[in-house]
Length: 450
Image 1 (cartoon, rainbow, N blue to C red):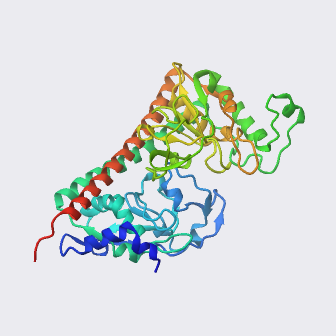
Image 2: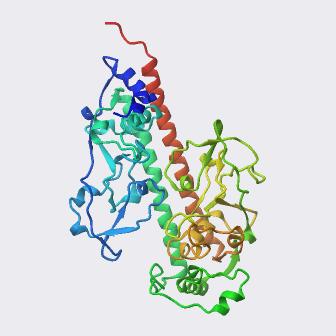
């Protein structure tokens, strides 16, 4: 009954499609839209539980579970796993956002807050995915949402969605592109895992639980705290697990080098974000770690406080400098072509390579490896409410070095994974644009008389 829905652009487009006697049908006639029952699980430790992801985490490039559930106490658990290639649609928050489940969610329980779309005929899979990604169709879905604070979309809303009919050849073409997107993301994830395994193997197994080491409490000498130039009193900065990791890495490392010795590290000055409909797109830190995120914010193009005017270049490392220890802070990624030409938030540290021996891919692995890198990076933040990372601390952060050949192999895998992820996002955008063109052609086509 929300009046805004009837004034929305998507509502008018829907009426225009449904006014045609032919050329479309309801989604319910070509696919099954369903949703698991509301999840009631018992949370347990990672040693005995099955990892669980919320709806928003499914859209992460690298989802990291924060909860584990007892599988035997989870009702209908089989339907809560996502099969590879399943089309899922967000039903709350960022309503109507579609994506394909790929290997990052294999064997992981997924929230009921995602609608699943299963085509009745496999030949419709690629076209349905492209159609749901089209901006005009997204607007139609938004016009069907309900709720005052948090918007929602139900299965019957999607069932009633008008879907345009395309010929078999076109469906096959859309399917091939969708399969390429899925394959690139799966390959990117596989390469990342291979690089992590190779990095860990180079230094050998570490005989402590780095995730829980020090959880029972620990003591640090004040003399050690006050003797350094930073004089850090944050307990996490003195986590004994990090000391143990560094000692472990030192056993096989060929040496250590600071990031600042091989890379330029800086941050634009904090800038005002003046909304402008015809302005330049703005990427915040959370968008950098999402699969092909919605980029809708535009701000006036002005001085953003660095020589690159707030833009980034493909091949740089971008690091989130604020957030929570368990969240994005300290996360890093390699910028791709899809980031160029856009303003990147002033909460993102830029790390640009110079003509040195250390490759971008190796540095990214050294600071982001789940056990041997990420734990060390999380000692950099300071502050209680919203921790932050200082640029100088990143410059001084030391990474363990290996034989140049081994470093190169790891860098090749990491950089190739970043390239594939970037290409998959570009392909997905092109796929959505192609579906949008089909919708536009249908709406402008003259309806047959009679």
